[in-house]
Length: 192
Image (cartoon, rainbow, N blue to C red; front, side, top):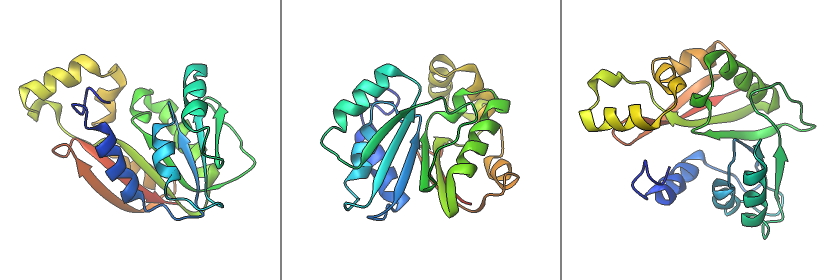
């Protein structure tokens, strides 16, 4: 993401996390959490009751997450695939996923959405930071070249789908959108 954002990722993700409206006592699940960078930013909004749980399949990400978040007592890491059904003993106020879901085939994305819905509290909020819907043929040539060069094959399918409709068909509602990078990136908020 640092390359794609020309090293503006920290500023960008800080703006996104601020837009999520984290409350001091929120319990947040960060799916595909990676190194814990986002969790460390989110943690600054918490009081002693707020928690962030990072979930990722990679042992490398687990080590980095635990190292980065070591001084934050209300963070934890679960090594778990998000693309297979899972069951946690708790539900969350907010679930966040950042540039992960576009990397799965669409059938697998459905499993991820079902996991999210099952682990949100009633009236909980889901935040999906990822590519917006757009027509790649209308992108400026340089952007199109970069997108085609760097992105996985599933991203091409992802940008053509109506994500509000998909989430609505999975019982989400009350959508809000915040766009970035000339409307190619979107933070999509949905309520359970």
